[in-house]
Amino acid sequence: MSFISEFKEFAVKGNVIDLAVGVIIGGAFGKIVDSLVGDVIMPVVSRLFGGLDFSNYFIPLAGQTATTLAEAKKAGAVLAYGSFITVSLNFIILALVIFLMIKQINRLKRNEPAAAPAEPPPTAEDILLLREIRDSLKR
Image (cartoon, rainbow, N blue to C red; front, side, top):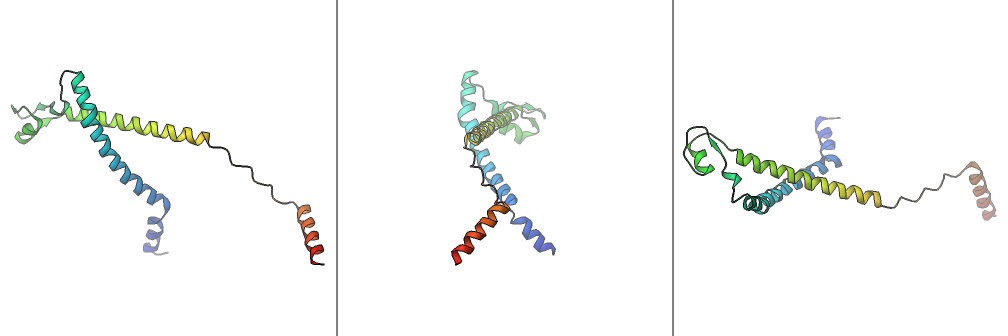
């Protein structure tokens, strides 16, 4: 088998295509979670903690006196631990949502009715009987 035909066989397998679709949907889902955390959850957390804005929490490493993270990054190196807190919250929320989705899918799978048992294969006696019926119908 040539390299190209092997690659073609690999690339069109269902698993590879399923993986590609999963990665694309995962990327889009990540953007939704980022928006959920940044636009919905973090403002509520900020309000609960007296107006804290995690995105501007940083430690200047180059002696900057900037008040925002963007300004401090322009002036030199910073330790942006507020961004790390936000990304960590994104991860926790994403993991929780995926856990709840998988839990729901597993619950639905358990509630599906079992398939009806298949009929047993015909025995030698059944085959002989069917042959006799066929032969008598031919007459």
